[in-house]
Length: 366
Ligand SMILES: Cc1cc2nc3c(=O)[nH]c(=O)nc-3n(C[C@H](O)[C@H](O)[C@H](O)COP(=O)(O)OP(=O)(O)OC[C@H]3O[C@@H](n4cnc5c(N)ncnc54)[C@H](O)[C@@H]3O)c2cc1C
Image (tube, rainbow, N blue to C red; front, side, top):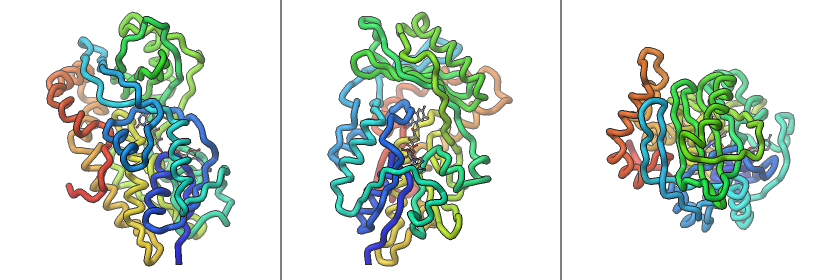
């Protein structure tokens, strides 16, 4: 008998779980509140762009626009210019493209509905929880949710006056916010601007405003934001995700987390799109079509191995600890020095095996 599995949240993680579970012979129903422009930098690795093209026949929206350069800026020390190595996609279109592609699969049903915890009849005994940073996730995780570290991000879209466009992305790091500000350049002068980190909300907001003011003079972007009031968003980020449980029982339902629910975004740069996709994939690898069950222990193990292989390599963990340590002063210049020393080697490596978690078969051993 074909087993049906409900998936709550139809964005990156939920759609990945749906796609891979369906390929393994499960019938899935995806519940998604809406197709929307999830606030996001939208930066994804070229490896992921290629993967979407080859595996799903999707040319991710916006990734046809190549920006040749990336500037890394630090509070102290001159900026570091290097060749760009990621693409920037638009989230609404990406979600739409993925849903359209998956609607063609016979085993996947979509229901556009905001699910509440009291919609008990919609849940299957094992339900995939892919609802990201939301009230629903909070209700399922309860105390565990409040124990998770979360980054705060201010972000909005803007435009650059024609002719004032340096054709490069910018990432400006600052220990004051324990994170960075960014300008990602899109098509026709469109820019995606944001600042986020692990500091308190007010500090990030003030930093964001200063960042915006300093952009023309310091970095050469002449920006006219479409909306002067930036929206505030949060993103759960855990450094050692594998110690976090992957399933949560509520009223007889076993909810199995993926993506942001597990805080899989990178603890330094907040890149969470690819880990979200990867987690849905790994979850499906642990689903047994014979018994109709998802083996959650195996899922936790696979997740751990793969995170170690990708964005949670020891180097990243050491860097996170260094950046967060109150004991080491002058971290900006240290960061600049490290970036300068490591840049040529790192960039060569990043091109092949980027910062952003690359997608692979989920089976490689560390
Ligand atoms: C401002 C910002 C900038 C970012 N920049 C980047 C970046 O440049 N690169 C990168 O890789 N990552 C970035 N991230 C992180 C990335 O957006 C997330 O890690 C990624 O979207 C996680 O995917 P997900 O599918 O787990 O969750 P989400 O993308 O949040 O999807 C959850 C889905 O669940 C749905 N949902 C929620 N509640 C319900 C409900 N009750 N019923 C039905 N549906 C529901 C929502 O509508 C949503 O579509 C950024 C995040 C933020 C906040």
